[in-house]
Image (cartoon, rainbow, N blue to C red):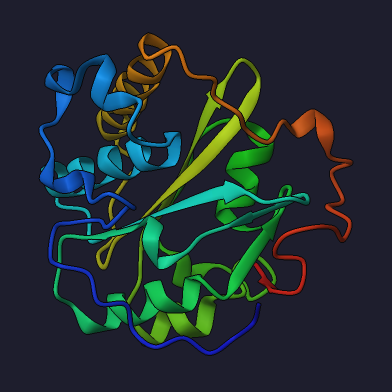
Length: 218
């Protein structure tokens, strides 16, 4: 990893998982048959796109456990509700990073299995937020990490990035959790298993291993 990335090109308010679920019916109308057509990650993608649009959140990232003790993301797992070129560029740079267990906002949410809300990332130190220079250049302010935990295992961490300072909003966090719960129920009703990276599998130090080990970390 650690490659240079060009700005992502995703339509405003959409997220582009394989199969383009954004063009499909949402909610209960999907049913068991449609749920089987999409992976858990793709259902989460649909969920985060809806939350971003409903809550007017500038950017949503989905970080998923890789083969090793790292979280990774890709342009496939990002959603925008803004045409702000700075945020699109920030999103593209996020794909160059991986997070160890406990590192950065996604890694901390992964370790704590609880939400992490930072009102203004520009007030953090470089050690706390190594994307600091990029965040300042792209006018990123608030960042929120919300883990999706199923039976003690973290399936994914959702990171919401905003270009304004927002105080912690418990209603927003609960809205995300409800949406994630709905995505989970669709998979459960479809009779499919849900796998994730359990913190118990890691030593807390996030030693080198598997997917994404060569990327930048924050």
